[in-house]
Length: 120
Image (cartoon, rainbow, N blue to C red; front, top):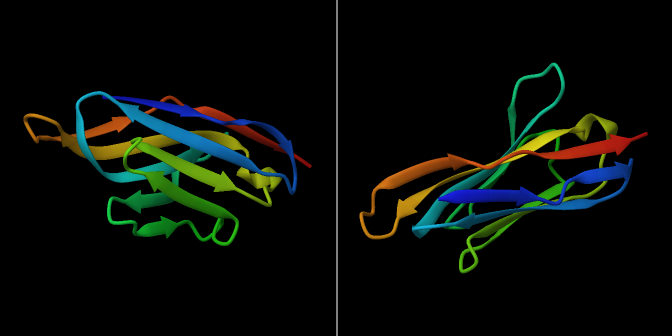
């Protein structure tokens, strides 16, 4: 299984970006996908997550500004980020837990990071 994260960039404060995480490979089902971020000098933190049943979870710092959504058919999860702040600047990573097709064993993969920079 491979995860491809994209959509990062440079944006002014108050702007928006949409990140995408596309999973490919022998996937039967994605069960839980999360977006994490790591800012310089800080630990990695969970930003938002979504389960296959559509249950979402957000960090307090992004509630009301970020929205996570998924397209099960396309094995894609999006993170819509609005009202961006300089403190949102970080490398964003997606993590996917799921079930392999065929064996139906479990997997847990990380995608490469995508840089988000918010200028003041």
